[in-house]
Length: 383
Image (cartoon, rainbow, N blue to C red; front, side):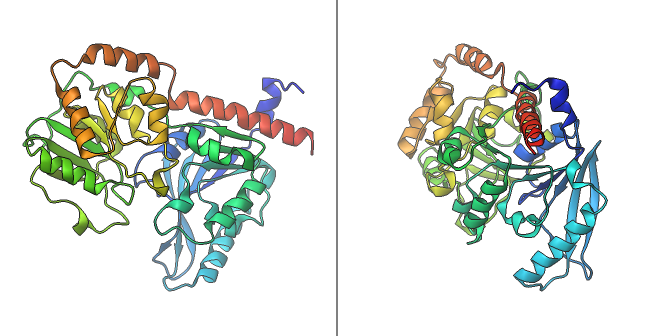
């Protein structure tokens, strides 16, 4: 059955409530890119995991932009698991009481939120399966079962990359891959400039940099070996350290930990780097990841070395846009190639721009929106 654009538009919900395991202000990544753009079409409420800092359960709300609100649940400390679920359920019920469910969509990043929201029946349920969360360190044991239930409940499912899509495609009838995208204007704006930075200017060249969360996915041993074997190379690491003991991080003089930086600062640091890094271990937690930083690095015009992450190999290595290295020897060989005056950066950059030409978060949202509208239209027609 053909559905006209006007019919599709009539089925868009006016409210989108997103349940996330990530805090809005932690690291600006896929959820922020997508939901900021979706807020142009519908009112978005981004519900975070609770803070345990209040005598009485309540929500506070922070406006992040037109039609975009971050909702902070506040619960008393010391609650057990069942009490936390009941408190979350009651707060959600109160919050949604004045919003007709036929004009609400639920958007899940964490299946764990299903435990306190499954009793509600919104007009549309979306699961944006960004990662294989069950493979991450400290993943709750009930996550796999809740994901199974969410896949049964969801009307439409997106995956954060092609490898994750291949793993999930037989678990849902309406599932679509949407790999990491790019804000080219943001990351490319300093491609031909170098910005002076107080915490960075003292670091000699060459500079090999990484930004992102430093956690169990980060290959500490690889970075330490490269830093030891190439003491004249400077390795710059930007981002918060979570879920691992900071004492386990290498302390080489040529490794520089600069802490977290906000999204607007990242192009400034990229402008100072000679090579950008994606040094992830190959384990269960990285098996299906699609690093957003890959196209961001490329848009900034910085050559990239990555370990053999499937969604980096396909398509980036396949198109000869990145170097792949899993051992320190391979890593050093790749870096020496990229740092050599014989490296034809102009041709490489032209190929990068050709590849990125039609890739953007705006295009991603446009395609997602089309599939959501069609799903809504079909669902309403066959009620």
